[in-house]
Image 1 (tube, one colour):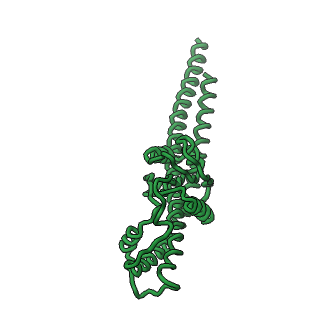
Image 2 (cartoon, rainbow, N blue to C red):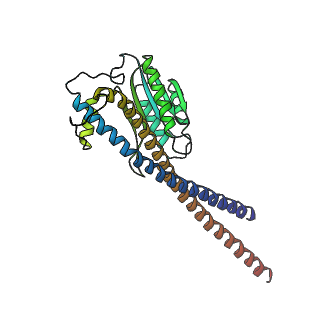
Image 3 (cartoon, rainbow, N blue to C red):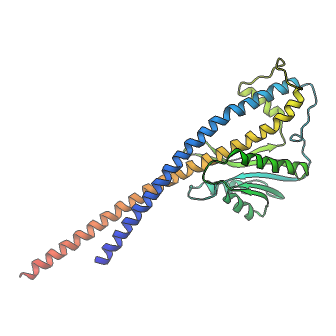
Length: 287
């Protein structure tokens, strides 16, 4: 009986310790979500301005043939996937859902630029060509990572190794929902960008003056557009990771407290039985 009581006591302490650790991780993830959302709000005006300027440029170039390396890629080459995942687990089903999404896409002769250790593991299992890998880290990656990824992308374009490029990441829908998505990055379709600009309330206009001209301005603007798409994917992926981890740790904390409560009841019951038995033994010994 004494051994059982000691075992129960150790399990109760272990459950409470796990609950405290999970609670701390939940709090950390909640604070990181706030920072990521602030970063998303800070990036939004910049991205919107690029869309607005692109719409105005295209309005002036609608009667001209405009060409850009991001628009005309060679045919029958490899597909590039920029995959963004967490470095670590303990974030519910997020990594599993991302892995399932990777299995859905065409990985035949694919090239991967991966951000996050989980992405590197997934890509290796799919026998893909990992062109470069980066760590996601425990904080939101800076814009320097975006520049490095875009530089690798440009080099693959210059050497005519890819015919398409995609972003694969978890899009933050809410604290409870993170959706793995695949978004086409290249080749660019200016009609789609223009339609998105009009949807966001950025109409074109011939009254805007571009120096030296609208065509040269758009040539310099489109790389910035690609950067904003990559950076937005990074923000979304990081926010999704923290939201998934916060909910996973909240569930772990609640389950650990429930186990501790159940074990405490068992401990008290066993202890009461032991005391009762000792009283009965003392009573019987007097007669």
